[in-house]
Every structure is written in C-alpha cells, then in structure tokens.
Image (cartoon, rainbow, N blue to C red; front, side):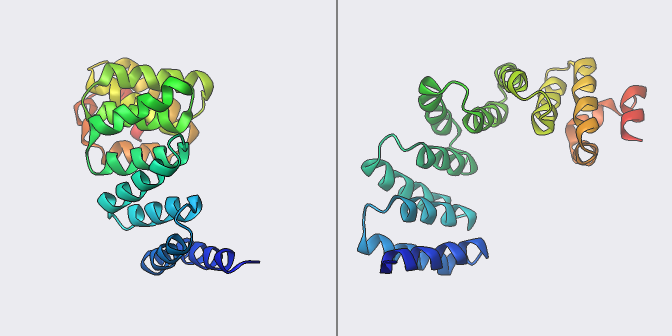
Length: 197
C-alpha cells in the first residue's frame, strides 16, 4: 500500500468520526502530493461543507471540475453547497446541466425540487415530486415535500392526502408537520386534527 493510500485511509477515518479539521489537513497533504486525486478533492470539499464552510467547499469542487469537467459527484456536491449558501439560481442551473444528460437522477431531482420550493416555484417543485413518486411511490420525504408544495398552493385536500401517505410510511412526518408553520392554516380542519392525533 502506498503512502498516498495510507494518508487517504487516515483522512477518511477522521472524516467518518466527524473530525473534519484534521481530515481536511490530511486531504490537503494528499492534494499537495497528487493534485489530481479526485477522492481527496471531493472529500475535502465535502468535509468543508460539513463544517459549514461552503464557499471553500465550492472552490474545491470548482478546482476538481477543472480537472474532471463531467464528474457528477463533484457537480452534485457543488449543487448542495451552493444551495446551502442560498445561491439558488446558480444551483438550479447546475441541476439542469446534469438533468439534461440524466433526466431521472434521483439525487439531482431532489435538490432541484428543494431549490424550486425555496424559490417559491411551488408548481414546478410539485411536478418534480410527482416525477420522483412515479419512480419511488413510497418515498416519505418526497410525499412530505409534496404536501408542503400543495399547502403553499392552497390545495388543502390534496395536501392532506399526501401528508396521510407520508405519515403511513413513518411517524416522523407527523412530528415534522407539527413543527412546520405552513400547516397552521389546517388547525381547524377535522381531517388534519385526526392525522395529528
């Protein structure tokens, strides 16, 4: 096993223990020794993102994309970091770039629906929820996102059906609903109150 492999194993071990500062330090050493090491480039970006240092994370993803322009993992991680920095239109453009080649990429579709929702483009976000649900009908997170879009569009009856479907999958969605201010407007609705009981 090479010195680089040993360093990568150490950095990954630290990363998994959430010791991001130490992991980043080793990933930087790896990149100094091997500037094209895709794993180290991606993982340093990811560790920076986990440390909420999104700006630097994006700069490492960009560095990686200069070397590997079509590397989907780098692009997806860049979308995620951009989204967290609320660079929503930029993140949306990156989603569309990937989806033009891979229209059913679940991770990218998920990012796109969340971005559209944040941009208050509820109809478009809802379309993506429905597209994902055709492929994965029992995805509770998407059913919950669909309910959020529907309540935002004042489609209360459809919202309640989607919420009910999500809660059937997991009770965590009942807790999420109770914490979400969006659903306050349903507090006088009998069906909603029964769902929350």
